[in-house]
Every structure is written in C-alpha cells, then in structure tokens.
Length: 188
Length: 116
Image (cartoon, rainbow over all chains, first blue to last red):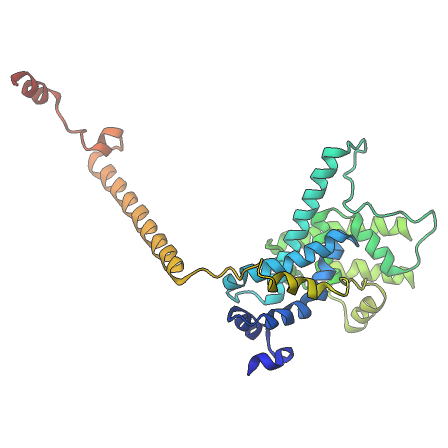
C-alpha cells in the first residue's frame, strides 16, 4: 500500500493520495516543503510571527487548491508561488497599515521589517549581513533575490514562480545587485 | 574572506556559480531559515479539525461549469457571425438594422393605420 511508506513517494503520488482522503500524505508534503517555504517567507518578511502565519497559510491554500493542481508545474514551484504571493500580500497589508497610522517624513520608502542597525559596529557574520541586507531591499527585488540567492533557483525557475517574463527577472536581479552592493558596503 | 563572500553574494545573482563557490555560499552565506518546532502539527491540526476543505467540487458542478462555458463561447461566436452578416448585407450596423426595421418604409405603414 502506497500510503504505508509515504516518505519514499514522489510528489504526484502524495497529491493523488491526499485527494483520495489520505491526510497523512499531505503531512508528508508539509514535511518535505516546510524548509523551502520557511526560507521564502522568512527571507521576504523577516523573523516575525507573521512569517509563521504566512507559512501556515501557504500550506492551507495549497490544500484548498490541490484539486486544481494539474501538475503542469512542479509541486515545489507551485508552493513557492503561493508563498511568494502571500508574502507580497502581507507586505502590502503591512505598508498600508504603516502609512495609515504613521506619517513618515522620510522621502525614501520605509523598509517592511525595519531591521535594527548594528550599533556603529561592523557585522562579521555573513549570514547576519545577508539577512539584514535582504530586509532593506524593496519587495520586488527581495523576491527575486530570495529565490536566486537563498533558494538557489535558476533565473528561469524564478521567472516561472513569480509568473514574470525572464527579461523582467534578469533586469530586477541586475538592479537588486547594485542595491545589495550599496547596502552591504554600509553594513560591513 | 568577508570581501570574497560579499562578491559571491553579488555574483550569484547574475551568474551561475561553480560547485566550489556554491558550496561556500551555502555553508557561509545562506541564512538557515526555519519555522518553529510545532509548525507541521499546527498545519495538520487546522486540516484535521475540518475547518479546511480540499476544495473538491461535485462532479455535477464541474460538468455544469464546463457545459456553461461551451454554450457561452458558442453563443458569443453566433452573435459575432450575425453582426458580420448584417454588416455585409446592410452596409451598416445601426440600431434599426439590429431590430430588423431598417427597410421599413413609413408611407404604407401610415396609410395602413389611417385606413383603419
């Protein structure tokens, strides 16, 4: 029986078993994609409680729409697309809330997570630097950088996940690179 | 070392890294993001307590949607063909043409009404 050794089943089988009512199969999908989804939403939103909520919502949405999953894209790509879209929605929601309650006198766009600046000391851990730099990027740039740098997707895969033309992704990556260079120089 | 890692971060955005560089990036640069320990259980709890459904629609609704779409597409196509035929035969698409009264001559109609 396929359901007895879910660990060894491929994604298509797990989807089919879930649709047949085997909820444990969906548990295996959650186990398999928990870390990639965490990388995406934490990369996009930072280490905040909302990131965990968005992560949960990603899998709930997947479960809800599993019947419509035609297998045209890989399951991983499909999940990442949901995670990115929900993260972008959360960023929009948050920025609407911020602009409604706090009037900013700054000309530059406030960053979503408003990361803490190092207290005059240069950071030494590269992971910390990257984490902080990511949060300072604009959401559109953050999504392409998260997929490319954190998740290791190719440019073509990133374009597929974001549902954008390849040229747009390449241009965003080139501009994000310049922004990232400036941000990192200030942090190091 | 830090400078080398920084260049690697920037390089990966526009270029494919070789195996050694990719390994270094994963070991030293990429933050290890994860959710809290009970994440999977929380998701499964929401699914198991029945508040979330699979989104499966009954077969009847699926078939109905499919048939409705086909009928709608055929209907729109028929309307377009009708308008094109009208345009070709009448030379214009006025409101009267659509109602089929463009060729009505007023005089016989008036005389008919007067006689009665």
